[in-house]
Length: 460
Image 1 (cartoon, rainbow, N blue to C red):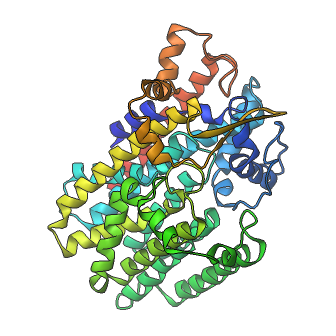
Image 2 (image 1 turned 120 degrees about the vertical axis):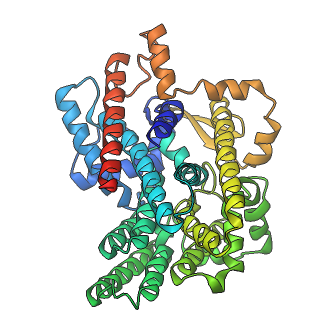
Image 3 (image 1 turned 45 degrees about the horizontal axis):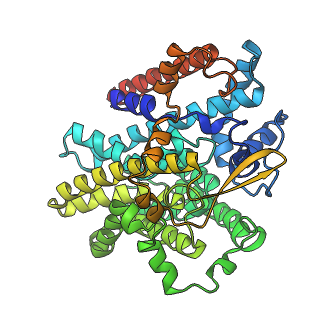
């Protein structure tokens, strides 16, 4: 598992999307608004212009809370080496933390699989956990666009399903609360917690105080998300406005649309949803709550009439953890599904990597994107061109593949710096390749040490 995570980090971790000078547009919208939430929470001053300047900061606080260690490391790094600003150092550590959180979620899922389906061989469990983490699209964001909420969303979702399986009430409540604070659309995750209360009535693991705490958490989350959905709005849009004018064509677009239709881009997720519906009466109440989570998040995607203007249906990221739970229960109920599940997970994971590869190349070349200039320089906005059909048209375009492969992964950065030590000047978070590579090496070493400690603690 450690070797596989190391290879994924070296081969796919792309720090370039965090650079101010090459991606100013991202810092004027979602990415910058999440970062501003963090700095406002701590009372720090942003030393970069244009952060969260084109939109109201309506983004939730969960991910910025999780980034507090990165912010403190950013301040400490600036005190030691002022070659970069506090903001740049903080972004650098957020990017590392995002990938570390994704890796930790894989360990959570591996442990969950061990408890839920102990007959699955350890090697297969490891690949199933990694495959689900890649297929969820959380891996794409952890490797490419780290200053968004999705890596931390996936981390909290994985922590939730493991806590419920291990019957750890306080851990589950904390994970559920942080998940709702991270992404409003993950409120249905609380249905899994409620389902576990029902399933555990006989063993009395959940005490009266736990139920009281859950009631308080549920009320707070409903009030918080309800205020956003019906009062303040998300991006100026309220839930009743989303639901108005829904048509069957919106449902069809979600399933098999030429943009990100889940039948073509998320086959394992869709298959698990179907199996969950077929076996619904045989599932535990926790799994029924997971099924409701999948349905409600899918309904939100249909109502939103889009995938979120980025890679894949990112509003489904948290619900992939629910799909893992349902898949394991289905395998226990129908052992013959185990092979089909493994094949679908592998296919979905590989296909997600392929789509990410094409997406990176198309963005780099501006294919399928609207390009506009303003006072801050070049901006790139995703157009209404359907991604999937456009990507298939570009499959034979070698320039797209070259552009994608030329994106700077950690391993690529290291190799290029050996050949041309000055090649990274002005393009990395930390001025000069030496300090950047040192930061990357230290961060990766900390990641490996942390994973080793986590594995040793779990065995003991």
